[in-house]
Amino acid sequence: MWSIVLPSLAMIAVTYVLARFSFGLFLPDIAVSLDLSEADGGFIGALAFASYTLALVASSRLIRYFGQYNIMLAAGISAIIGMLGIAFSPSFPYLAIAVFIAGLGSGLASPVLSQVAYAKLPSNQLDQANTWINSGTSIGLIITGPVVLLFSEHWRLSYLIFTIIGIIVLIWTARSISSDQNKMNQATQISNWGSVLASAKYLLVSSFIIGSSSSIYWTFSKSYLTSVPFTTANENIVFWMVMGIAGILGGLAGGVIQKIGLTWSHRLALLIMLASPIILLLPSRIAIYASASMFGSSYIFLTGLFIVLATRIFQSFPSLGVSLSFLALGIGQSIGSFFAGKTIELTSYPFAFILFAAIGIIALFIPVEKRMAKGKPRRLNGSV
Image: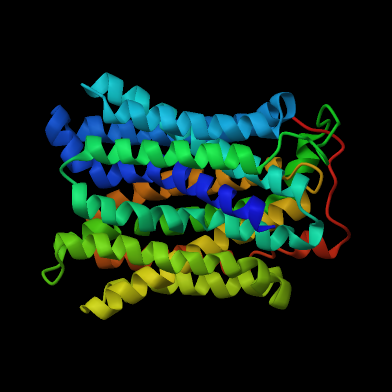
């Protein structure tokens, strides 16, 4: 199992964090170097989300026509080209194009790696494998933290370092995962999209709500910490790293799900995630790092749980389920981030954090396992 899990985990770290999420950490220094306005930075951030969404929407069809191995390589190559482009960007237009290309890799990676796990591993290892692969986001957070601490003003050098890491990971993944397509779905077309979406409705609703509720933490937790008097810039980076270290615990999701079931795993992780922004508001360094630990572990746990549920619903073509779930999550985060910013402007950070935690409580009442209880997981009669 680990011969598949470890390189796949590393690919998630490269495509999600090094190529996509790290841009926000370096944006202040990039903006100074390239004379970018706030609007320019916001536009580029939107482009990263747009490319991620585009790749998610297209991933299942691309996998169907080009094969999981080729799309896996495409995810790594797009991240490498994007990071290299960022490193050498002389101006706003070049940077925007590079960030767009970098974002494509993250949209391809999760769906295709879930398909790789399905094709290469026995069914009794799938839950654990998928949740450990998903925890690659945490590894990426851990890597970016020290780089930002050491080279925050040298962002071009940082992205060159990330590019080298990306090349190493791509070679490792290509050599570890062969190109045979065993267990790949051979059907050609989904005939009833309404039925497909109905089978995943609770998964999609939960993904959307949790994406919306978590968006304020991802987008504004560091901004909030800069506004309180007892934290420093370096401590904010350590906060980011603590989230990553704690997120590794999210890799245990597969084992926990097998012990207590999807429903209770979902509720437990959600309660921990919703408590984290409340804990963040306490005027204590211990509370801040405890909050980071709670959020990092629970968020990675929940996204791993979504992958497990998606692969159970869409047994013969799990990449489609993962694409739909992460698309709903991303749309929720995008909408939630917008309204979180407006709420903070009109009220305050504490009110906004409490409000978005309250919104997430809705997801506690979603019967994520209800469809599963009615029969065996759905096997698609087609693909996209």
